[in-house]
Image (spheres, rainbow, N blue to C red):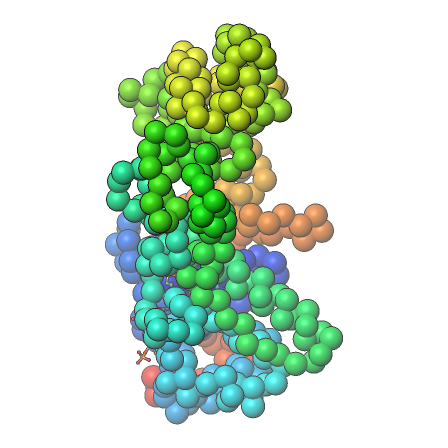
Length: 404
Ligand code: CAO
């Protein structure tokens, strides 16, 4: 019972781990994302295909009488029910948690909502709302600029991953207790969890300026953790610096971290051995903190003479943590990601081959094979007969009634 992104992320991951995932979709309509952001007319969008691999699709309207009976049978037969509709939607279909437990006490019932209990519990929520209400937007962006959302779908996909872990834990608990339970994840909570370090800094702020932030020592701090551009904000200062060709290539940059243990190698590599002389103010991490903008400006003078891969090649053996800014094009074409199944080419009967992101979790004995997403209702008949035990006549009658 999942749609859009957060719920389907969770169930796709479970499918990759081997679950038989049955996607229940509204007859004739399906998950709204089938038709959103379409690149090819009348063909399931990449938005849909990339979130619904390895699943079977059944169409079913639990708001009809026959549909309720079939849905009840599915609850009896299945281990886990996952949903991320608007608050109360499943209750309005006639299936509150109490009823689900009555039907199947072993059922694990898992939901994503925008907010947990509180003033906003009834709100509908999409990705960026979660980023804004979970602390990410307030702490992301240029120093004096707007709050900023990130391209990584930390609210949707991030919360879907949390839900999958909750479900697996509840299944493990059920092995011992014999009982199912309710698993809930709020997107606001999921984003705040990922922003943990910013809540850390909020509390550190009470004891003085945040010396790893670019506002120190020349800028000022207010009452809340500020946006800090590309500062790492952590114990090892980092920044994005330009590389050769940045004028034409918007991704010709690299993130360089001036980890204390590797600073000597970095200073030597960029021709500033004098920084290491103990009389030099920058020879210690503390001494460098008030001058980080100058330190990175000097590093950048060097990186601008090389492309981002050459910089990586030189600094990596020196244990200097760094990361070239890789574009989606570069990631799509990267052979090592293809080799590990992180980027996978999948064939689809209507759209042909396309690229997707495979399982980021690798198990040595249980590799994931990515198979295409189902067409709307592709498995309706086989699920109604195979899982729900319905005869061909009963299936026809349910279709005639618009229940499936
Ligand atoms: N048969 C019949 N009706 C169905 C159905 C089916 N198989 N599946 C869903 N529906 C109905 C629901 O019952 C609901 O009807 P009611 O409003 O009458 O109860 C209706 O479809 C619409 O569901 P919705 O309100 O969830 O959909 P929406 O497009 O208006 O809102 C969203 C989308 C994402 C904002 C909302 O679902 C939401 O807030 N979900 C929780 C948070 C979440 O997961 N957000 C992430 C979204 S992106 O990952």
